[in-house]
Length: 222
Image 1: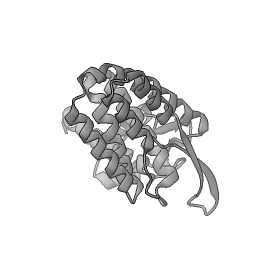
Image 2 (image 1 turned 90 degrees about the horizontal axis):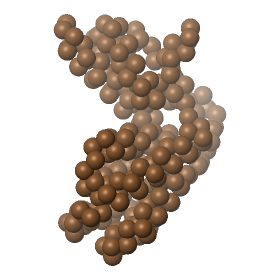
Image 3 (image 1 turned 60 degrees about the horizontal axis):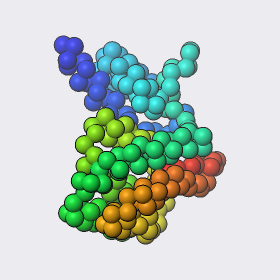
Image 4 (image 1 turned 90 degrees about the vertical axis):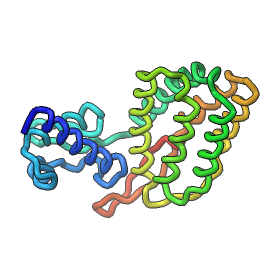
């Protein structure tokens, strides 16, 4: 197997595991066993180790001496950190994007908001929510900034799925509509302030663990 093939396999494995971790299919604290993952993907331990390293770099896994690699846990402090980072970076992107937002883009963003309002499960709501944010921020044309925001959205999704993957109620997103209204009126400061407040709101609810107990789960719902 060439170095390029190993890299490709490592990327494929890391993406598959990341999707499971983000969706909550693999819970925080779960041990990631090299032999099991290697068998599942028909791989040697080399690309599996590289995949684990990618997960660690993304903050999705942690390596512990003599205990192997586990899915990273998170607490309220980490959720708040991500929320504050999102607020700072998304406001920066919005201010650069605002002069380039067309009527068509704003209409697409409103369609995404309507789709989110009608969502009956957390996965479809998260897709619609991320589409809204992407639409209004992408015109900033700052790829490094957008890549950082995308990583934070993935982390936000993990928090969200951990709390709400088993229960979800359709909701109306008034903040999205207020942001769109301000942007259409050319009120960039108002749109930025609403966006910052919006992504810093943290929801909490008790969830059942695989052992049958309960724990408080925190997530960014915006």
